[in-house]
Image (cartoon, rainbow, N blue to C red):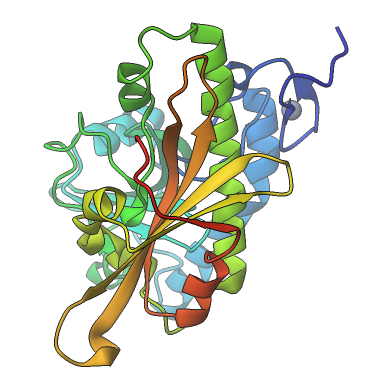
Length: 307
Ligand SMILES: [Zn+2]
């Protein structure tokens, strides 16, 4: 059935259009690349497997380990053991929220390293496996942020590097009486708005602004900004949807250069009754006045909004 009324979803590798968001497979928790099949995932990431292969060879060459006298092959069973009972985990994210994990498990005479992406707290695509008894080589994989709470946080909904967003559960809880299909469509709209707003922010943000990894330290500002904003602006994006920008300034100390802004971008959802429902798309702290100014557009509102 051909219709332009439904949102468009397609495979990132073969570009095949699929009917629903559910028809896409994901390998990375926070990057929004979806695929129609396992084959397409493999085709898409194959160059990265090669990249890691070359990387490993050059590390081994550098450390004089090209002919390390152990069996470097890691079988599937061992990979699963490393992933389910690792001794160390390191996580490295980039500004696109693509995240790679290094899992390390130590055995009596050697250690096994597995580089993988993770989706919903499970390894989703393995880029590299290797075995070594060289401490120097293991050290090369101890990069990024060490994950110490992997098992204790398995059931928690983790927000990517402090970026606030609406989880499906939170969303569902607030929408009990509404129609499920409409909810799904709205949720998909929220997701697509989120990636657009994020892309826009990435282009405009300055290098010296608050780093993404520090965003989680500002989460306490979220509710306060929603409840008692300094300013709220109502605007329409270029798709004609109504957005609200909540802005509040916070000061950490007495000096002006220690203050920052917290900005929450919300999407308005029209409902049958007279209330205005507003859902957060994205929130960010910034010390950049110009970034803040980007969100001071549209009509400035004074009255409170129901969230
Ligand atoms: Zn495909």
